[in-house]
Amino acid sequence: MFGNGKTALKLQVGRFSSWLYSSFFMSYNPIRLSSYTFNWWDLNGNGKPDEAGIDKYVVVTTRSPLVMLRDYWSRLVDKNLKATYDDQITIGIDHELFPNFRVGLSYQYKHKKNIVDDALYDFNTGQFWYMPDSPYWVPFTTTIPAIDNFPAAQVTLYYPTKNAPEMLRLLTNIPEAYRKYWGFDFTFEKRFSHGWHLGGSVTYSKTWGNHPGDYGNIFGYAGTANTANWVVNADGRLGDDRPLVIKLYGTFNLPYGFVASFYYNHYSGTPWQRTCTIYVPSAWAAANNVDTVRGASYTVNVEPQGSRRNYTYQNCDARLDKRFNIGRFGYFSVIFEVYNLFGTHYVNVTQNPGGTWRPVDNNTTVGTYTPSANYKRVTSISNLSRTFQISLRYGF
Image (cartoon, rainbow, N blue to C red; front, side, top):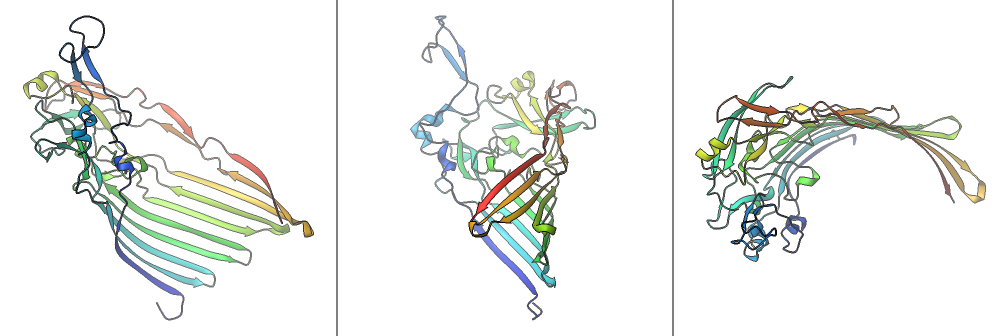
């Protein structure tokens, strides 16, 4: 950049498409094992299920059995489905500050669009109905009571009408779904010389949106567009958001031929938010044509996604090795490693009160709130062990 070969400026602007993985379509295989829940009325009293018409059956699962029929499973993927893509901008600068020592600063922005997921779709009319403005959803406003340091919060959620279509979903691109990321990354590295090497980075970033990006939710199986309630307090910091990430690593030659190395990482805790399962009042449901068989309750975010954060995590692993030469027979090394050097451990307590809220009517604070049975209970302890490992390696 300055003509002395010590500084480099990097700029990248691009659009990067993802693959349309076969796992997107796997669940639509008609011979794949499926299960459905029914209520059964033994109308003839013979103690065994008979054909519909002799006995009465009502589906109580939100997944319609119609997906097992060829007329439906053969059409469960949008013929115009396109791959998800990222619009990205990266700009950075690297500079050799001293001999064998460089520093760098970069900025990156990503916007994921064209997200693929399965959305509620009416195969008779050819219309989607996963947004709250669909006539098949009835808004219901209620106030979840305060508990401990969680204030009372008003939310509006949506229940399906009795004349709503079958809950069939079409794998398609969800235009309302998105994920975004921006981050600043400071790096430094002292190349191995004079018997030592040291490097590290500090990243300050934000990951947000309304569609999760973890492994279990990127193949069309997320809750996005499955009901109108997917939009309730959905915008916010996503589960993989880590505003601060610090990494350090190094290798050092010690006296008597010993070599020591370490790797340390520190990052912000995982984001979370208060949730609650809200049951529709039966009288209000009857008066508003709500289908309580397919939608008697929904679990929604009581506050914006990612409003709170779990504990900060850190860990350090270290290694010490010594090599012994045995002439023409080669060499062997003794390696001593310690994982979780500082013995840091974390007590996991259920902080989300979750639970259920059964209001007596719309727009009222009267009802019965029951927090989750695990609320404020210790559920596990992470990183409880410090591991020591000794290895021998022979080479020739």
